[in-house]
Length: 599
Image (cartoon, rainbow, N blue to C red):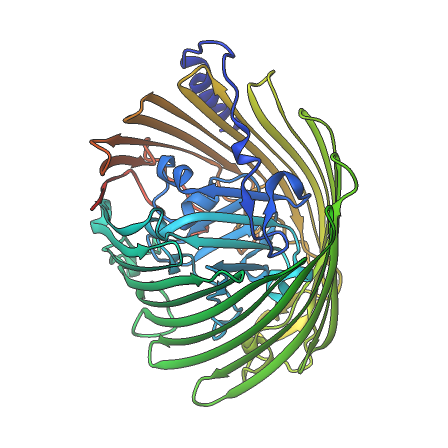
């Protein structure tokens, strides 16, 4: 299978006629403004952080039909559904599973703190709503706290791209009775803007499990409503506000309850004030979220509140000092148990450039939790630009994950003496842009460690802190190049080795993976994207190795005029019979048709 994957990708590469190295990929992507690395505006080429940026053009050209699928196409990230649309997703960033990853939507966390391990569901947002995704790999505890012990995925939703009234409608439908429609409408002026987004989705799905007893289709339904706006004045004051509600119902296969469905409602709102006074950039953000989850006849209620106050002082033209304070409060209620805890954190850091080629970043967080006491996390990074074709970056970052409210306070399985897990990653990155490949490349090597791992005891399922460490090491590479004037290729490979103290290896995590895509631009109105992915070396939860597999997909985009676009995608073209977890089904060949129109 490994040889087959390489051979198929080689065929794709050599079958496309190249007009020679006549153009290079422009530098605009290196100059993109980011928010994620330190929560203030930063240029991509002025940070040593290991970050991926996916913009709306990347999303439109990809063959992905969900957030899970587009994350899985990125080097160093593994994601897969255990069943159809809306089913449980497992996702990893460089070997750190989802409980160590913080997902933000417009700067607000939508993690369900009533879940066994606080997590954000990937079906919380549809691709139709997304403007940009920023993925920050490795522990980010010093910047984002205990929820980001393994990385951060920051999602920015669509707003108004031009002045005046803007309205668009987008719909996609296809296999398994799936349909998703999104309406975006809003108004933008020099001083303020307001945008409303409404998304509805339904999928008949297919049976999540492949057992004979549970072969009925497991459907998924959701509605998402989002309102966001901003206003600014002449005194460098900007105010941003968001309000978002997610309702979903997921059917699934299990043996614990008679009613195999999960209903979820999450409502969150935030307001953020940004002010620039001379050399100081400051912001204050307040966010509140409410989660109501129904599992069979059980009801769970969760509430979170977050207050952020962060300041960046420009010491000189090339150096910045960051000082901030954060307060968080969490509540949990399942009608039989009530739990409440809060924490406050102090953040400081310095970053900048010593010259045009050398940059640095150091940050420190001290967090005090009412239940788990005091924790510290740091991030130390530096980069040196030898020349445009060779850039070296080094990083040593740490993080921690506090036990979830369920792990600590649940009456049967919880343990109140649990202590936080700690994480650490050491990384070296070589990257650059060269005419040899007519594009850009990056190569990362990293070594990570998870200590004080929280596990569930076999038989009793009572949570405890395990002895020993979980060790993760890996190498990932990516090459993006232009083949002639009409073809852009993207190739990535990853090898990840993960082993727990009890000798569990790569559970649901591929040891080797390859991804590649070719985007053929026929003209300004039509392009065809072909993608391939290969996975090998993952194990199921019983420590039995899963079969390797290769998937091929196609997507065509056609622009009828300046306001209307059509797309056609085919998933799993060769109908590969594959699994991401034992006894769970995955999608066969599927076809989806979509269109978008602007009014």
